[in-house]
Image 1 (cartoon, one colour):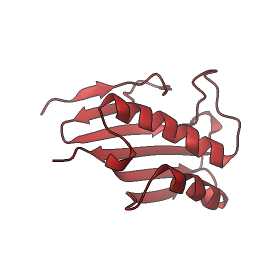
Image 2: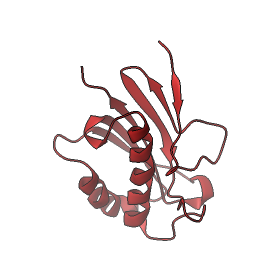
Image 3: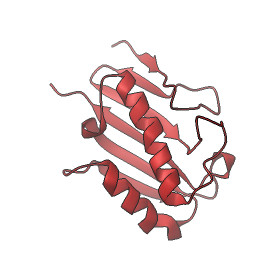
Length: 127
């Protein structure tokens, strides 16, 4: 099955990787950090704003493949501090509708650019 790299003007790579890969039935999105595309700098808001910025990037990548939030089947959230879980969770809830995708939330020692959150996801094409 051919694999097509995906890029999006809403996302910024901080290394040698694709924003996403379209692998036919599935689209795999690389972890996105809350970089403001207008400035290229880390979003300075709290975890709520940083979570929304991550999803803005991810949904931009999905749009390049003709997909959207309702196509997401799995999300991994990486938090620098689990004390931010409730704030991230509230923002997350606003980005999806029921039934929610499967999700894992993992506490990590650090994230690129000292971000407070990084999010990656997998989406599936219907049919």
